Image (cartoon, rainbow, N blue to C red; front, side, top):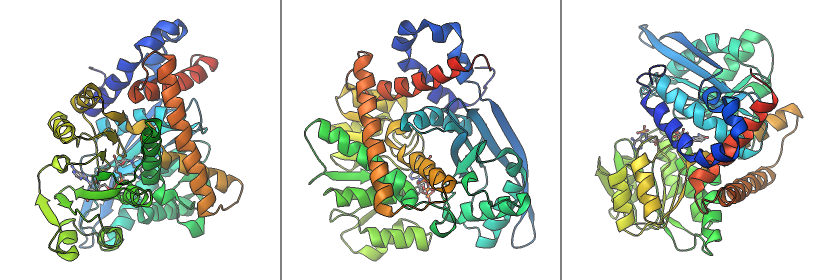
Length: 434
Ligand code: NDP
């Protein structure tokens, strides 16, 4: 605790994983002998740096940049960059720690890392965003490389930011190293379906959870929290599979649209105009209600997909969902449910999938982008989506099979933690004390 003082979210993430590992420690004493748990909780490298930049009025601002290179037992560090005022070391470490196991679950050769800055992109002009990204990369570039560390997007970092970051990397290094960043534009080394991948992947995972119980999305009412990258494409896939998303949110509140979210309108507001969710209610019609503040989890639904941010769904919200009859919760965001909420879902027999399994489709498709870069190839949308679907179906099967093998049948939390951990632990054992 003293070594990681004040890093609340990191403690939460570590606790949640370690709690699942008791049956592993009993079965595999060699992990204890080699101090694998202690080693896996300590990042291989943490980089913290100053990011100075100038706004449009000529004022100089200073932000803090982070990159935590957590574990490279399975491949180069891989994980996104988050630009949000709440970012500090504890958030970056929780995300990096989760990323280790998530990346292992994909079955792709990628290690775990995460980074970002406490920079707030809201209300900033394109030119300010560009200057910030260029300054950020001016330090970060020396730590990156397609065989070393490969960042991607996360909250506040989408296609625009990846473009500015890649441009500066290319300029400083004089190398067109496509595989050094993922989430690139399709015409300059990006992959089809990367934008859609996390949201689609979460819904593919939820589809498998329903199928395991003989059910499907047809006719199901769904809440998707957030209205960013993950949320928008989760909505698209739910609608394609016959479900209806009736509520979405941003940090100002949520909207209820019983006719089903009009995704074209929501994308126009969120992706093109970068506006607020209340504008959806203004434009869509009188039947839509905007609730400022409040809890989106009060809306009665069959399926809940939290796709916004960490700890957005607490114990009280979980009780509201359960009392309204929710059947399935799959996390599109990273650690959106508090430990109390997870306990409520599991206690009530609600199917519950943690983010490290259900949202692994984004990083898996990033690894597919790296494959295409390495082979100088471009795959079609349908081929890439099929690969994503197969990966998510595989993670679902492996999670359930691992839960069975360790006598916790149906427990997706334990299954995902154990499957991810044992794969990384075996690689670390093989490589000796490093
Ligand atoms: P975006 O920045 O695109 O969107 C985040 C959304 O969440 C915004 O609509 C934001 O609203 C909303 N939000 C933030 N805080 C709250 C809150 N307290 N209550 C309600 N809504 C809130 O990020 P992404 O969609 O990329 O990421 C969302 C989550 O998914 C994160 O946890 C991320 O780590 C995870 N993830 C993302 C992946 C990816 O490929 N992008 C991959 C795997 C996981 P506002 O605009 O008001 O801030």
